[in-house]
Length: 190
Image (tube, rainbow, N blue to C red; front, top):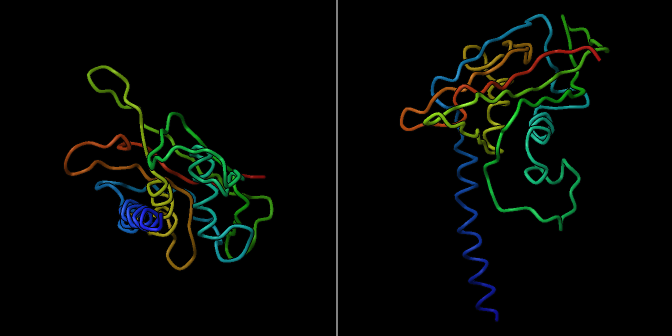
């Protein structure tokens, strides 16, 4: 019995390892471009109800099925979820988060931040093809948008993340259903 437990633990660890490496090696598809908008307002991710880590988790939890983010969706530990690491992105999605918005160093109390994703519908041989992405893709593209400066993202150097969007590029070999999908952020009044 002990031997079977040890073997199960070793195989379980080996099976989980590629997912951990994949998340650490995430990078945007080549040709991903940023289009930045409002550069007067910006997000403060150091002070406020949302920080740079929580915006990734909270926005992606709203974009993906509940099982992709069990804790953020308040699913119990014993909730049944299938073991997948890619999920369909079948329609535009958005979520407004209470991120602190500033302009010229002043807090704007009646403003929040809306994160959104718009999948580009693909067709193969005249049949619609579903768009799929992973939690690493979702968090990676949002992080790219808010942490990198133009042309990779919409962070205003020395100030903070501004509004804008990323249009996901294409792989150098093969295809990706994410190509042409838009991930973005805009400022909205509460």
